[in-house]
Amino acid sequence: MKNLYFLFLAVILFNKVSFSQKRVISYPLDYSKNFLEKKDYDSYFLQDPENGSFMLILKDNKKVEYLLLDTNFKLISRIAPDDGFKSTIFKEDDVDYLGGVAANRVFRCVYKITDKKFLGSSISYRSEIIDFEKKSIVSESLFEIPKNETMLISFGEFGQYFSMTADDSNDEIKLYGLNADGKSYTQPVKINIPATSKKKKISDYFEKIKLISSTEEPGLELAKGKVKLFLTASSLRITVNEDDDPTQIYTIDKKTFALTRQTIDHSFFTSDEKGASYINSFLYKDMVASLILNKKNIRIALYDKDGKMTKVHEINDNTDLSSFAQSPVRTERRGKTTSENDITDLKKVIKALDKGSEGITISSEKKGRLMITVGTHDPVQMSGGGAGSYGVQHTNISLGSSSVHVGPNMYETTYYRPGSSSYSKFGATYYKSLQFKLLVDPVTFKLAKGLAPVSVADQIKDYIAEVDTKAQAKNQFQVNGKEYYGYYLPEDKMYVVEQIFIRK
Image: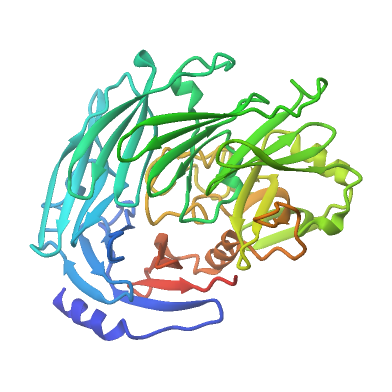
């Protein structure tokens, strides 16, 4: 193994350049398995938010290596246990990596451990602590989640990790947290469900919650969700939409865990629209954007941080298509193959968006203008994939951390782990979509002239679709605002990381 280490130092300076990517790491690695044994190759990513250094965990069926690298992808330190898995978390029956926290070259990874037994199984959560200064690896119990609580979502970023559950018996959500200093805690947060809601249990009210990170350009595959958690460095903000009821926004301060609730009442409905409309809301910085749909028109309502309406843009069958930054287009994508058709009849656009898979996103383009994307997103079935198989040729597949049955709701994963962006999740390149884009002045909120740039999501998906189909243990992550993709090439016995150049 020492020879591999020094070979790595020699080859890391080698850069493979093409018009779309640059190789920044070529790490010799012989992933192996026993004869007739199922491949269990994987790679995990975790970054220290203070200095930007990050850890890659590379594992196969027998062994694991922990690599610490700086933001220039220079190897700082390496731990490769001589006994394989015996001194690591991977000796357990079934291990799912959920994320973690890091500080001062100490990385605390969170794992869900399923202990398989003859008459059932038990689940626990443990932390494996990798200390690159001491060259040590230890694990410890983290927390236990009672069986009467429903797991809603797990995620980690900005130096904190959370598992969020619903406790219906006490009408509260619970945050099981871990800080970078190793302190773990449980924090209950009382929730009052609005009386107008059809859902009376916390687990139902926050069901199918989707994570929207402020470090990632959002896509419609997540934005179409009716319950969204917007993660920032200082807060957890949850939006809930139910039919055409007012949008509810729950904000939890990450330091004090104080809860505030804001209601956005879309009061401009006419009497015949009420009860026949659908709303989907999205948060961006101090703004709220709400997509209001019915069978007659499309409205995009913009609100300030206090919930005051600043602008409403209406689209109907008389709207001038020249006002769009990207005119309505229907897209069907199946891996490398993409077909697109422009839609000039806005009646068809309104009809298509009134079917339940619609969403809205906001981001900023290079000139500082707001980019609003409105559209639908639906998974498509890949021919030859078998019954119930969407987007791949397997019936069960890992969504970054946990194996679930593949089906139409393939983005409904519970665990969001770092190094597994929404762009690279299962099914990301197998979908149908009808969408359009608008440019909005960030001061006047009026429509601005210009063309929409190609989204970051589409550029990364295009790159991933071209990567060697034999690539394994894949990871798509961000370092210093740049996008990277890591994967193992079994024929070359090499783990590589490439930078994906993004056109702005």
